[in-house]
Amino acid sequence: MVKVTGPMMSMGASGTLGNIATFSKWKGRPYVRSRVVPANPKSALQVSVRAMMKFLSQEWAGIGAVPQATWDERAAAGQYSPFNAFVGYNAGRWREFQAPGQNDPAAETGTPAVLTLDSATGGPSYIDLAFTVTTLNDIWGLAIFRSPTGTFATSRANCIAVIPVTGTGALVYTDSGLAAGTYYYDARAFSTEGLLDAEEGEVNGTAT
Image (cartoon, rainbow, N blue to C red; front, side):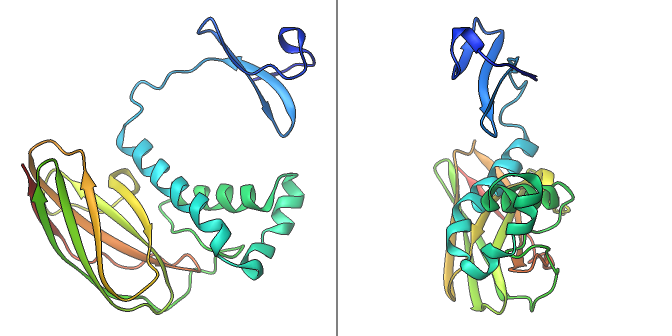
């Protein structure tokens, strides 16, 4: 990445030129870099990263003023927003297969939720996962994992979704866009303080 002062005869150029160079801004400073095209934009790890980033981006506004304030110091040190501090720190935790936390730093504490992964019911290009949440305790979210083979170990590489859990009772997640076949699933809840719970237990379903 190269910082520039007047890219393309302007102070605010953006976009890609000739599929070679990309112009943009970072922290308000213009830069230019080589255009990079992912070899596989839907690799397992990229799906996992996008799932966590989506969760974090959507959850920031709802965690409340008190947890949000814990990110001020990290944000000031890095000269970026508390939101960016929250997302960056928790994305780093996810790279180590650690759960995100609402507060900085994550204490990795909390009482595990009482929930079960009950079944996986397939249909045309989809499978519905049915959960029962009995007691919330300190749960914040649920990481969902999928494998083409049974008896698999959950990992960051096979996480397909990260969803919030806000109430007790029935919870359904739909895994769509599937080719016909049998798929195996597991799930792990995590607390507001970044404690990743044990695996719920494997189920399988068949998409038609």
